[in-house]
Image (cartoon, rainbow, N blue to C red; front, side, top):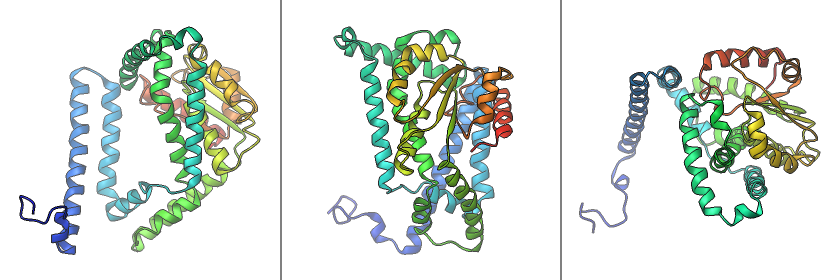
Length: 334
């Protein structure tokens, strides 16, 4: 017997009636929601205290979206959120993540020369230290161009973030698959309001899925070490059996020369021609007007635009958002 007088190993839920268990579940969900709200409110206060308008604004927007989901969505919103968060059992997703892992391992190996292999441990320590400094500044949108001029820093960033962010692309697009949507929707019943909302969302997601299968040209904005590009190619190879590769992939970043020297020059040979027939790397500052003819042409022809934390890691993210929105809408990409 446990100290509480219950049989050892028995969950307290076993002693509750169905209605009591439901009440407990709702209470835990409410407490979790309140903790998230409190966390965001605290982040806003800290941003104000250190005069950081970028983090303050992005956090206010995140908080507004959270409150809208709770207030406006009601039961339907909660239901849709549970569907979105449903873990996928699709073997294609696991296969795509294995592709990402394989490319990441090959990339790490290719960026390490013979001399570096003798100093792996020391290099990893230095990479981690410098990468964390860069990440802290990127989170606040306070990074400078000079921070990208150290190869050790950029390779440390790629070692820490590449796999996770590439996997995020795979998992996000995988949740648009008809198989995933059918499986997720079958896990709980829906009332009339939920069904109408779900039907509307399904129409949009099915349209996006159809377009994903016809991608020929990709534009990765704020590409960094190329993790978004790898995530998309792994996703297409696994879910759509894309054996011939994407026709053209354009990687754009305002520190593109630095990323090329540190990572991209090693990554491109791992993807061309198996995953992409052609890959180009171009300088692009999204806080500007994107008036360069080459960049404008890329934006016009792209079938899909990839971004990962781009706006939150940009100092003037409102200007960046307007610039990106203009070029995406001009093309009408996914």
